[in-house]
Image (cartoon, rainbow, N blue to C red; front, side):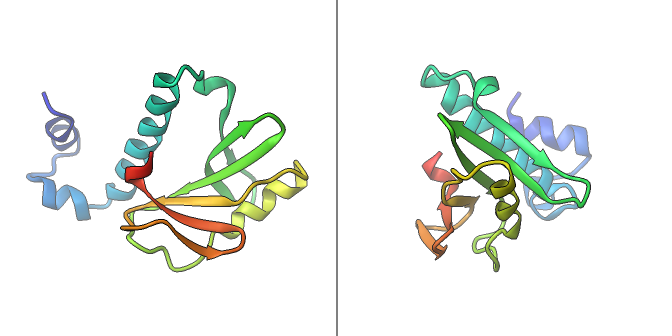
Length: 128
């Protein structure tokens, strides 16, 4: 059974187009992308449970993935849109945990790698 059929059967969406614009589309997209990141790490001999984390605080600041390499934190946000309109301000919260926070990325449906500002880049999901 394809994942598309599985998603449609669990959510009761009649077709892929309805699923794509439905209320759960962002969550389903985020889960798909996070799973692709985990799969890529695993296929490259990296244990995701040793380097990949999630962050959410009491103020609802959320970072979808934090990749840790050595003592460097790489914040990652996942957005369904083609060009999220603002850089993710929640990346700044990482600075209270480490002085070594790398440029953050927003994995999204953009067509090309592009900077938003000096602290954040839009990255196509095809780069995973």
